[in-house]
Length: 599
Ligand code: O2Y
Ligand code: MN
Image (cartoon, rainbow, N blue to C red; front, side, top):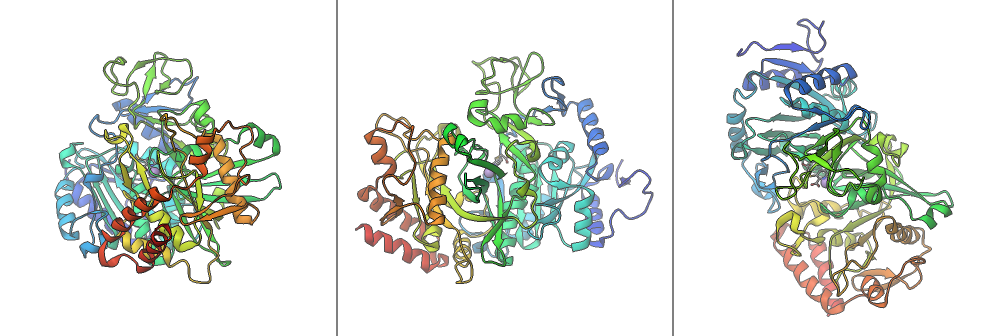
């Protein structure tokens, strides 16, 4: 049925325009001419629309209904076995000048990038419905929010975008008012890994993703828009788009501080965002609230402080390891109205994953085959749940505040078995930017097979920065302009190990002790010791009561190994130099200053 697509905004729309914005109408027509769908559906985000989409997906097997009593209104999707994760090697940033994408990105010239994917998109939606998905990243009425439109042939993507973004009629109305939007074109194509590309054209605020139906490759509002394209927009417009969780901490005095924290994958970002205070802290009246678990957009407010929003409205969380013990808030969030991707299933249709620890057993694995532990785990290690943030017991109403929340501290962190202490504070903003730029994390066996290899992942943005890291660091430095009242910057390492290879710090809820010290530093009440690498907690300034920490643990968690840091700073110097001329001199000077102090 080539070239005769039916178009529906609502069934009675007839042949009236679907939008009052000519540039949007024209782009949809242009995409339809290229991809040649049988039908075009403009999404309004309504319950009726969602129910119709789900009914279609249940009928064609895209979704499987889970046990309605145990998990009301919840569904399982099994992605293609070759399509289970983001594909960094197939992710490109297409800028006119190769140096603008930088050594941190795969690059293609924009004309080549368009030609490459447009050849794949040619006719790819024949026999399918093309969905036009208007969405808003951030509260619909916030000046910090930005909008986009994703065109996709995947109803699974539509259902996920409805949870992860503010999607539908209100977003379309905002787009029509503003007249601009990020364009995202997505097709699952043939799901052939050889014909898969995730292309970004930051200068055109455009994304083209072909050949994957999974997560960040396909839900274009998330990594593609809210990080890669937004980081480029943010640089032009004077704000920051970051791979950070945002949490609120209310002390017994009743003051609330907001903290933004960047960690590479598999470092417990979602767990920290939903932290449950340890017993003693709960008794004393401490509260932790969640603004976001993955992405943070922030900009200076009229008072010079940084104000942050979570551009997302849901969580796309890793299922394996999520349990009542590790993250009771996440577990509570996914008890209903959830979409599960690539988890196992029990005999009575309940989702199951390694580490759920709920006394049940899987019958079927993530590929839909009878569970056989000798063959594969029940849940894919990167299996996910998609749930509304509003379902999370710790979700803060402030996450909906159009003004955002004021940030008191920025935290960088990585997985470092050795050298790096539990926490230190940067001496000023420039030092803080260096701490973020030098961030490193040791890989886990699950991620790469090569265990314990330290990789630099500046600000946890290695896979997500839409432009040259050297320019990105310069942008960060530019916030120190004498007018802004910038937050303090810290580095944490929850993963320091002892000589026996065991973790020295209990982590989880006890991380609040470290956050309490940071708040004390922000308020000027907690003491610190100055060292060349930054300020370390003075003895007794970080609450350790009730914890059993031996001498080795105390030395390694709160000590400073001059020799080791000297080698680390040589390596940081080499890393900065690898970016050549564009690397800001101020950052190189800061590295030199500390290297000299360590000599
Ligand atoms: O987006 C994906 O496909 C999986 S990776 C992911 C998912 C949610 C949040 N963060 C990440 C990440 O890789 O940082
Ligand atoms: Mn992430």
